[in-house]
Image 1 (cartoon, rainbow, N blue to C red):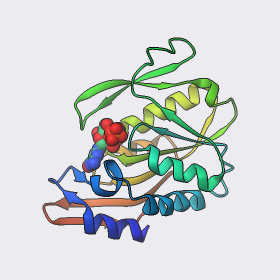
Image 2 (image 1 turned 135 degrees about the vertical axis):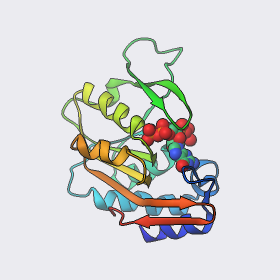
Image 3 (image 1 turned 60 degrees about the vertical axis):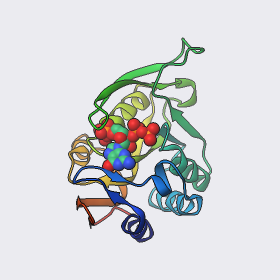
Length: 193
Ligand code: G4P
């Protein structure tokens, strides 16, 4: 997605060769107009996939996922990163380890919001090592639904997440694929949409 790559080049900050800061339009402040374009790009890429539902992981996945769900005209379901203190029953959980944050959390789905046989488009803001996406896919499949595709706003293509998801047979739609970065330099490889 050319518009997204241009925005990353303009406002993204490569902290080092591993971490890209995009808090001015994605993680802290959200550019709602750009997110609208992101949502339309995912919806267009998934138009033949008969998507019943968009699923995302709190918190930074919510903005792009909501715009995608609006563009597709389907509901949005949010996976939480901690067990609810109110809802103790009727939840599916799986442990996810974040290498970026060096900590584990319990990814949680209320299965009543993802039904058996449904086709799900999973959306997240970043793909690094693919742990969060794999955990989310596990929960969706445990609920009896199918992951029709995984939409990623920014893929760090130099990290192993993409190979992991490809290896498991998931269709990955990344709108921007960063191939290399360092101070003052961000390079892209061919995106999926
Ligand atoms: P993985 O799921 O692909 O294995 O990724 P990892 O655990 O390493 O990433 C965990 C968190 O760090 C995620 O946010 C992810 O979006 C974020 N992250 C990973 N790499 C980058 C990066 O280069 N830049 C930025 N800005 N974020 C990155 P999270 O914990 O889910 O936070 P949030 O969604 O609540 O914002």
